[in-house]
Length: 383
Image 1 (cartoon, rainbow, N blue to C red):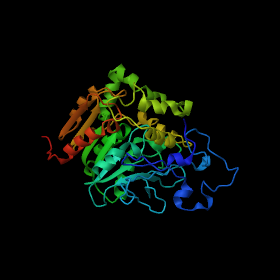
Image 2 (cartoon, rainbow, N blue to C red):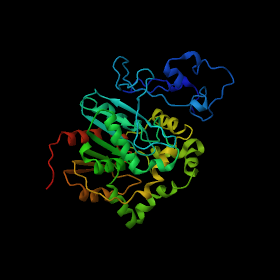
Image 3 (cartoon, one colour):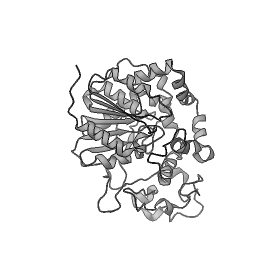
Image 4 (tube, helix red, strand yellow):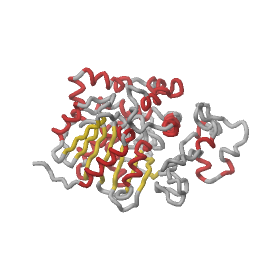
């Protein structure tokens, strides 16, 4: 059954370390004179199944807070306590069409002053895909999971030209500086992995260690896809996404069936031996991507890729860990080993035989252990 009552979005997961509370912006702000529970009759209501029907469609925004089941010990620190959201004003080097800066949304765990670990999600995901890593690494790192440009609560410029790779790379550089750091451990999955590779290539001084999950070096990807029709077929969605509006429409059909099947189907989803997404996890994804225009920004990332590749510079000079789920339905595993030739430093590749494309959610305990091992290694530059 679909959820249509706000209270059901606020159910607690007694057996979980985390809890999600879906709140309307007015309630989050603390001004209950016009909150969703006191709004006059006749106000426009949202119609998508699975969202609170008391929220007006033009204000259906996600308010997510993470915390331990013990309320006095929050797992996630809040940047702006007034609105209880992890939002910070960020002035990008690339301006939108209104010549205004972009505001990026992120979730942080761990004390300020600790070394920074920056997490970049893939498609179609948002910061929530790193929930297991936020909890795991906050003891020794300031862990920041970002909503990329156009995703979730982060601003979404309207034109596809605003999503070129050079803009996405500059975003990460400027965010790092806005957080008060000049270097970090950079981790990326899928499309976020592509961005992580490029940041490491363009700004090597800002990345102490690079960890990529299920995405090869960009040069490997572009060369391999041209020579292997099987990978070309698996990457057919890159070409499908070049069409205007129709890809977004297809994701919405039958209450976002495509989105749900990506994570749950036998062909592309997390396997039986993996850590399957709960109903609440799926609902979190549905809620975020059902917002008006929420799919256009993410798909616009792909609508510029052919104008940005191949790369002029290739070498990665910092210690690098590449984690790969062998059952990845979108990326052939052979690309993982070829990636080695572009890393001019310590390179470690670990392939998990029964894991899917959604590796950090599929096998969080194993992934976290592998990352810990890599982070604690004393590495030296290969000669």
